[in-house]
Length: 127
Image (tube, rainbow, N blue to C red; front, side, top):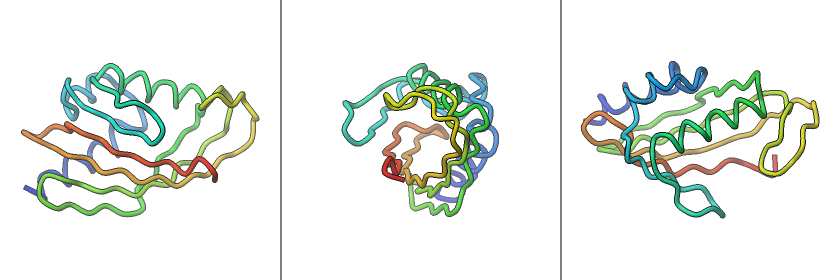
């Protein structure tokens, strides 16, 4: 299970994250996904995830997520990312600065039946 879940996450990070393509999201993500982000209430649903990805891409039009490390164990895959982009739109209440941004992020994804059903992510907002 861990090997196939890792393969799904490799495709998710390589194919979906750079594009935000809804058809790819439907392939990789459960319509009932539950997302947990520090300091925010639990968020639910594929369309909520798509809106979050779109908002990130709007704030950072040249956004690139680089996978630094990935580990799979059973139904869970952990991913450590580096996010780079230029801050061109409002993000987390901060207006555009037009400055380059580099931030680290870690996320744990839980999968069932070949789809992501849960994400618990922590973005380094201080960086």
